[in-house]
Image 1: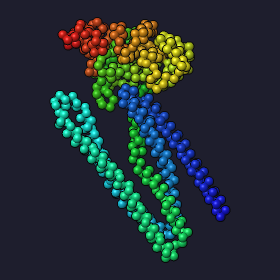
Image 2 (image 1 turned 60 degrees about the vertical axis):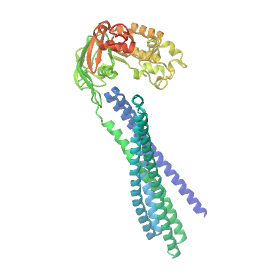
Image 3 (image 1 turned 90 degrees about the horizontal axis):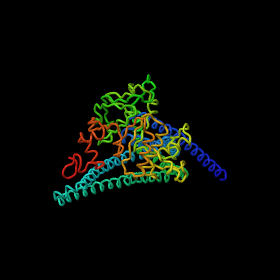
Image 4 (image 1 turned 45 degrees about the horizontal axis):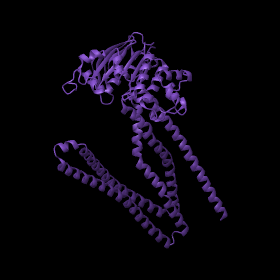
Length: 534
């Protein structure tokens, strides 16, 4: 007995060690695979220019790298453990039952196959019912949401009674669908369990008859019963994996479809280095379509920016204005027309030499979750603390930075929520100032700024912008008035161009845009009797 106990302890220890080693090895392999996959997603995101252009594209990249990759993480770990280990365990247990009693094992296998065939059909039937009911409930929920958005229409046309009856019908349809779904789910599992239990009882009856007849000993019976009971866990793990495989495959398809997507911008093999802008930047009949929808954002837009000029881009559609900015740094290329820097087509210019001379400040990417010093210096060792501090002083950011808990080492936090819009904007200004770009693109905050912050920003403009080419996406009247030329985009076309005072007198669209944002012309230029723009 002592030897049997020691043998049992040895077997348990060996089993524990093998399970640990296998699980640990699988974990290492899966982590390495997922790390490489996420690295590939990151680098491919950098290559896909349009992703930076359209917000949904970036959201797709985030979803692929997090939700879908995490599903693959869990699924790959389960597949490597369950698909390799559990079938071996199940096979060994089945072999043991055949060694104990061949005919009982045959009866067991036939019964299991029969239960599986009937159970799978029953499960498929109830699953189809549940899916149909879920779809019906979802459609009724959409109709309920629609009714909630029609309140003005309902009140104006006195539809309260009619719409109340519609809502009651939708609520009844939703409840019926949910009831059918839950009933199907409640019936499926107990019914399959009842089938399995019935089969087990029949097998026990057969085993009892075999024991009474003297063809099977009590010991063999216990071994057989233990083997049959132990089959439950590997069989359950295999069935659960089969059930989850469609979702895992869907996530895998989403990841690899993303990785197979062709990039919108490539650097030509014979591309040349380009020096800082010295003469002009020319947009020649440029057209751009929105990625995914195909909507034309820019249609044959042509204008020229001379070196050292300040240009304002205004329009009702932010995507049209951003399209010009993204074309400039080649986040995407036009499907028609050319953009030339000092006469050189940007398609034949190296990306690094182009982007090193352009500083961009956009409202959707002012700061990131890291220290203030890394937000300004971007982790580049070429910029020491002294240079970062000088840039922050020019941007009037140094004073509030030094008041932060850890000064320049203070973590900003996710999306910069600890800082107000003026502080975030000044940190972004310092980042651009540090690099001393020849071309600067500045999208000003659309939120209201305090007067002292406005004065600080204006002082930064006066000190840093002279002799630089600046493209504003302005939201302040003083900035608009300081521009050498204002370009108006309307429905993808260049509607008009000129100085502020010229456009005020000549462009109805410009006056309307100014009124909508600043209420500048209320009761004056172009206003009707009610004080609004005609």
